[in-house]
Image 1 (cartoon, rainbow, N blue to C red):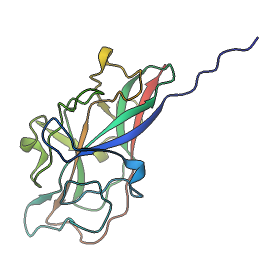
Image 2: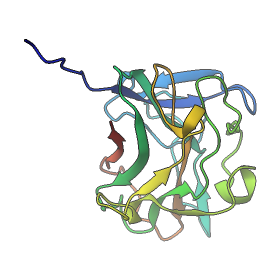
Image 3: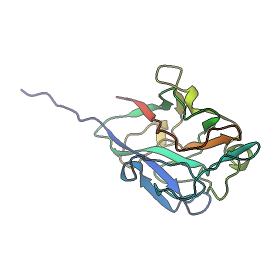
Image 4: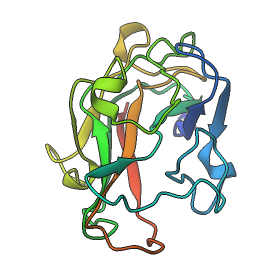
Length: 197
């Protein structure tokens, strides 16, 4: 007699961009982009290049275009996924450069990009993105219960259990203060986690 062996669910991290509000033009698996797999810049595209560089402002704070990312289920393999979260390694880019994450999770499902808002400028995420009323430093979220950033799920039953289902968006933006050191920055790592049953 043999016991049934279940495979684990598989996921891709997806970056949506372009298009119009509630309808992204492109959905890109970030593994196809790098390394690095995501670049903050002054343009709304998925290209990893040296164009549209951030500059240190003469005064105040400058902002990149924001990024809508989410987990997309490639194959659930009979599993149910919930408790999706994102966290950093607790490091940072350098003094006075931060990556902010919107405190809310705009809606993203297998059938809808309802929470998507096209990034058409380099204004601050809070106040400019209609689905975001506050933000926090991603570097303040690290691995471990209660120290990561929980992301809601808007699929049926608030779970992911089929191919092409997603969590809601994590919306990210880099902030650069006038006191930041100039020059290229080392890559930093963001990680998604989830529970699987």
